[in-house]
Amino acid sequence: MRFVHVKLILISVFIAFTVNIQSYAEVRSAPSKTNSLPTLLIGIWQITEVHIDTGATRTLMYTNNDSRLNGRLFTINHDSLKNNTPEYTRCTNPTIATQILTPVDLIGHSMAGRGIPPEIPTPKDYGLPLEDNKPIEVLSINCKEGLLEGNLGAESGLSGAWMITLSSDKLAVRWYDETILVLRKLPENAKPMASFDCEKASSLVEKTICGSIGLVAFDQSIGQSYSSAVNQYKKQGSVNTINQLRMQQKEWLATRDKCGGDIECLEKTMVDRLETLESAPMDP
Image (cartoon, rainbow, N blue to C red; front, top):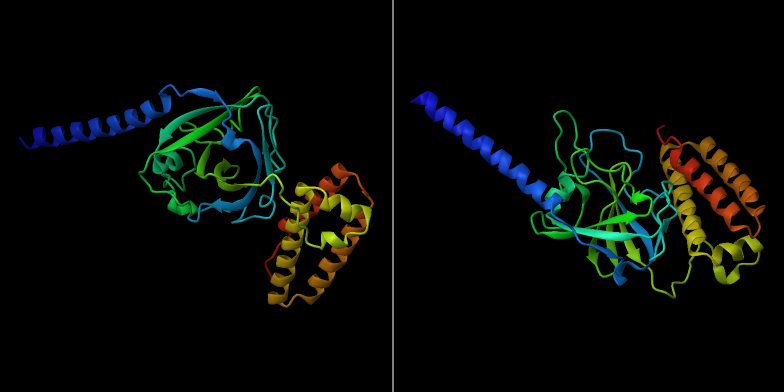
């Protein structure tokens, strides 16, 4: 009788496990309606927060609110979806497919686990303002070239750079290296604000930067990253390193200024400088 009782328990556990997997599979495989982009998504969106798994057990490429991502822009319209992140890939003729998931299922079936066997992260681990088991609408972007960032996601879970609306002007987007980006929609008359006073811009370079939201955002990111590095080295008492950093920044500004009004040249120069600042070792 004891053997029969144990056998019945094992069968019950197996059935419950199978039902749970089938339940998620049904949600994922349920026909999702494919539509043109809703009006809500059309516009320019700026990354205002970069969230990482706070319980991650490996060294991540990006940090919380990483300057290489913060401030970058997503421009969305019916013809294309563009962004100026380091991972930009081409997306034309975008449409959306939707499905309903709970935040726990969404994070658990799309973001990487930790260790072996993997420990599954939760929305709380990512600092997202979501109720674990309250169903939400998840948007997947299909481009002419394929699923947007289709290489992202767990092998047996939800793939691609999914999006969810946090409010009428805020989106959360699954991104590279297990990050989740929070984007804010910019008003149509958004005024660029650089690290310097655009009202007093005199050189061609400064005027070009002040005329572009994207370049202004890079300028701000570089300023923040540079200041952060200087402050960190001050805490370490690394006077020589600070002097070297200041000299490098002065040399970089001279290189940047050679771009004049060439927007592509300015963006490339600024991207390279930002990557150099963010990749610099901070340990004493």
